[in-house]
Amino acid sequence: DSTNHLVVRGEERSFILHMPPSYDESTAAAVLFMFHGLNSDAQAAASSYYNWKATADNNGFIVVFPDSLTPPGKNIEFPPGTILYTNYDGTGKRWDIAHVFATNRCDSQDIDFVLAILDWLQSNYNIRASHVFASGHSYGAFFSYYCAVCLPEQITAFAEHSGGLYEYQVIPEIWSIWWPIDVPASPPELAGMLLHSTGDTVVGYSNSLLLAAQMDSQAQMAELVSLPESLGHNWDSSRNQTQWNFFLEHAPMIDDDGDGMADPWESTHGLDPQSPDGEDDPDGDGMSNLQEYLADTHPLDPSSALRMQPPGWLGDDAILIRWSSSTNRTYELMYSTNLMQGFQPLASNLPGRAPENVYTDSPGASPRFYRVRTAP
Image (cartoon, rainbow, N blue to C red; front, side, top):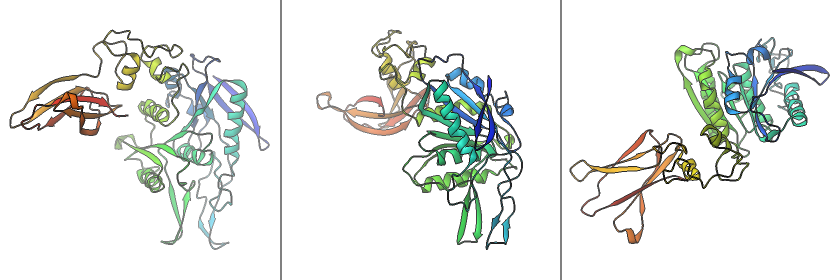
């Protein structure tokens, strides 16, 4: 790891940079910003407690751990001279978020800091601009969301852990202000994973519920992950990979070799992401690597394939249909009473229930042929 320094708005700033061992300057790498919590620092965010460095090493992305300053406290006054909320965004070492009455709600020295880090990374490393993500804990969670709103052309997707959204009522039932910032209407798309323990007594679970509701009202993409009550305000590092998978799902597919398969999927399944091997069938199961990718089966395991099992007769005109499945895919089930006339839909948008899906059909007197495929 390296500690690096930049000057932003006349202040010397620092950040820790973690490079995965697999980094190769010939291949553009994704980047994650991890923002620490209130009165914390970059060193804590880079620690094994958060465990992002291990996740980065397993997935081959760069992690940036910026360090905050101590901006002055802010009050909400209405009417002018009457303080409604004192130090509404906290005090101490924390991220700079523009005043809720500011004309430019993104006028923040830390937004400029993030942009300066990105410029520095682009000058010194081969980074993939379409795959820059943000995550954070507690106050850092609020700032992660804030960054995603203020930097829609730079931040592809975000996660917030134990943060969310606050509502400050200036005139009850008439005028409310959202902190850290209002949810914008789509487009552009704002994609966020909101992780929160139902037992959090520091920042209430209701804050993430509020953010999810506001994002939904603006046609934005929010995935709420409710964590166990016993977790409280602590970080769940077992969900790091869940966050990373979410980020990749909401970013353009990385396919540098042009074989139709996502390069991260190839790497985790033992294939070479620099080799156009989509038509190969290394496990000899009759499915090409590309077909295995589309089905999310394993290209090196001949027992892992999208297959239907023989139907089971349940009696009373009921047949049990079974097929191998993946939780990362949805499925379409079709049937035909005459193969010369093709297939027609029976059921669609069936979520994968690994290791297999089951479906009950009532075919009537006519014989039926069945076929299953992954949904496009």
